[in-house]
Length: 181
Image (cartoon, rainbow, N blue to C red):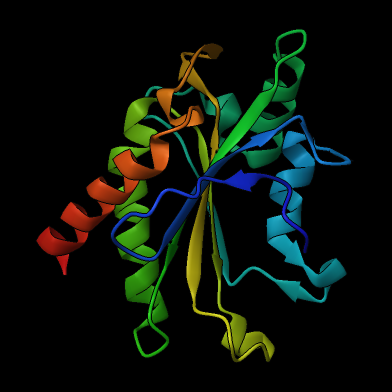
């Protein structure tokens, strides 16, 4: 899969990647649905995600508890000329760890530090080794809506869609791992 966003290049502690998925990147037009689907089915559909889940703020309306409903509602709510679609934060893990433990660690972090910022987020775990790609580390992508979810409305853009988000999330991730591992 070619990148559909420009990762922040800032050096930080930890094996993480962060960036914003824009409506247009390079020669590609992105959609929210397309960016999420590319991570759910890799290699043209030959490798599915190991696990995935939608995480929402606790006060999100029940109607949005389904990924398709959230994506449809968000895409209908995009502002004219909105550039920022999603924030992507990827946490990589060592190959010798428990995939379930990695998932739960990433999931609890995302619930606190990304969803806690009122961002609906699709969490996707990839395990390249299980699909025959021995050189890739297991990793979890957090794909967060770029605008805060207030009730059933999308409000202000998150600061995480701006440069510097990688440093913020990487520091929070390092602290989370130190406290929970």
